Length: 165
Image (cartoon, rainbow, N blue to C red; front, side, top):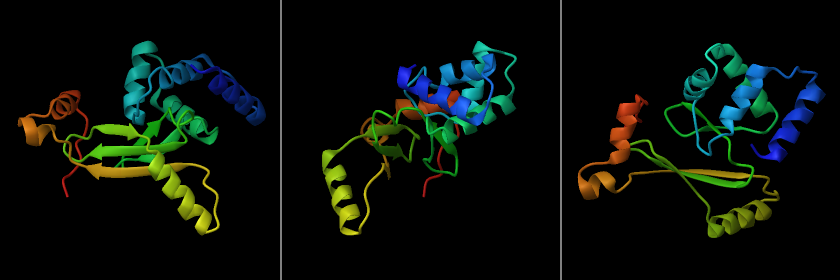
């Protein structure tokens, strides 16, 4: 885990008068052990592999605390399913391509988008603090190959697929 994240979390815990608990620390370690999006239930499953005694409620409370501490971002990538993103600190311009076929999420950065966003916000009298764009698209795997390995992996993992529009 990045030392800046740990310092910010420690400061937040002190400021709020919260206790440091072993379960909370394990959850935080699991959250920041990977650089990928996850749902609360996916996190709960990952945490239970590390600590079988951690309750679902503790996971949800810790997620709320991390969001409030601005260490984790809640994003809606579709189907009203809240997804958590642990890696926006290094990338304040945070954009996502979401495949409507297989649900795969790809983060992207684009200097042209950043410039355009900056121009629009300045023209309208604002200053950009952070940016998040979601683009829904179809990946080419299914069309080009007739098979999408991401779709197969998604179905095998039991993740809910998006409804086609």
